[in-house]
Amino acid sequence: MMKIIVNGEESSVEQNTLLQNLLDQRQPTAPFAIAINDQFITRDRYADITLHESDQIEIVSPMSGG
Image 1 (cartoon, rainbow, N blue to C red):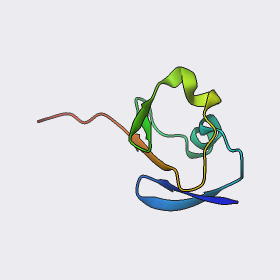
Image 2: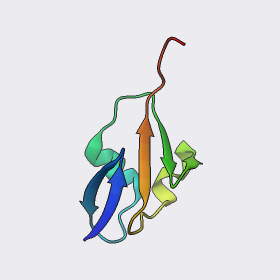
Image 3: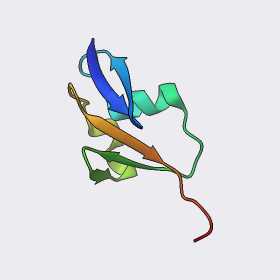
């Protein structure tokens, strides 16, 4: 197991977990965007990104207003 940070909260995942697997587990409500260590990740790369120890993942949804 390894530790990652998701939206500011520590979480544990298996070694070699793909970003897509994390999203499948968490099932965020669409639409959403993903950043890992402050780098935006496009949807077409979710299945290619392997998470690493101490990665900081932000799952964000758009907000209305201003």
